[in-house]
Image 1 (cartoon, helix red, strand yellow):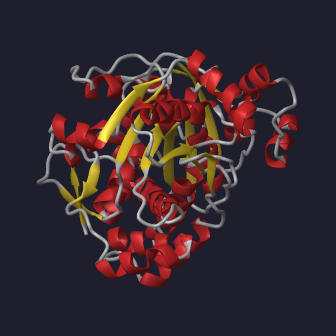
Image 2 (cartoon, rainbow, N blue to C red):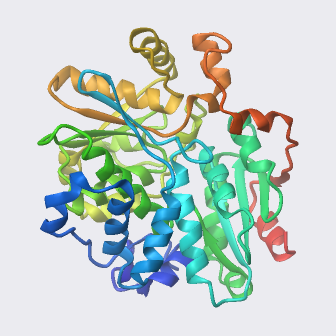
Amino acid sequence: MRFVSTNDPGHRVPLKQAVLASLPPDNGLYLPERLPRLDPGFWDVWRDLSFQEIGCRVAQAFFGEDLPEDALRTIVNESLSFDAPLIEVAQQQYVLELFHGPTLAFKDFGARFMARLMRWLTRDDDRLLTVLVATSGDTGGAVAHAFLGVPAIRVVILYPRGKVSGLQEKQLTTLGGNITALEVDGSFDDCQRLVKAALLDPGLASRLLLTSANSINISRLVPQIFYYIHSARLLPAGTSPVFVVPSGNLGNLTAGLLAERLGLSVERFIAANNRNDVLTTYLAGDAYAPRPSQPTISSAMDVGAPSNFARLLTLFEHDLRAMCRRIGGYSVSDEETLAAIRDVAANYNYQLDPHGAVGWCAARQWHHNHPQANTVVLATAHPAKFPETLDRVLGPGQVPIPERLACLAQKTKCAIPMAADTSAFFTWLRQGG
């Protein structure tokens, strides 16, 4: 299959180029030249398939023309080595727990798949591949863990100073080896801008083999489709879910829309924003207006210029009405987020992280007018990753800390300070980091 730019459908490249270049030269994003659909035979049996088998069938639809079936199956099976439980917290109000992977965040699904796919695509190339990743929290840790020790690949993580939780920072700054963390004096949007500038610079491209592990890369999105289909099959037969997606860079929402295009029956998608709500305001009829991100307690969603908005526009052929028919938007304040964490713990004995709490608030607002809906909130990170917020709301020590996080307290942060300046970043890359 070929992959095309959202800015120029005439720009068509094979899978390897789409994955390893990450971005087209016109600064668009790659999408498949045709959106596949899973055949009726799949939908006859999908509820009886394992999570891994669903992943194999989806990956085959997108990448099967380019990878042997056995190689693709190995990549999927190694990536999906943990579960994604669907929890009914209240009647017809579900939470999909996507935080049972190695770094306790949903980014583990995409990062593990991407690392294995890139390793396969570069198996005959002896050049060093440099993977650039901007993170507002969980992406950095997931990518660092997924690529740690992979031969001939180095990872450079850019994160905004003071704008990720302490445990998230430790996850991406303590591994060493082929992982380097850059502490950028700016916002996530600055980190993302630096990564995109490097990928699009012809001078760097001719000198270094650069790619990205952000959701701008199509290979990060496809494995996120797996858990949409997996979770829907766990609902009562005949139920079409309303997926409520805590939304920052819009990659997770885009993956859900791709699942629907594959044939999954979905009643509605809800984009749950914090006060960085450029998508919510757009869906309400305002012009799309990226703006500097504002800090919130749901920091991974603090994105003022979401990259994947370009993919949304392409999927809906720039038709706002069509987009509004499938996606609703809600903006949630920090005060509402804290109240949701408190109320869900008190009333249902369930702990939400700040991002899941934003989703819960949006789901409750949808339920107010649609009481028969089956909402599925995507819980993107383990609550223990945000001890300052959870301790503030629930009291100290109420959230058990998994050992894989607790052990980070004794590790030493190692990060290189970096100005939010393109020339400084380019100079650092040219000098070999």
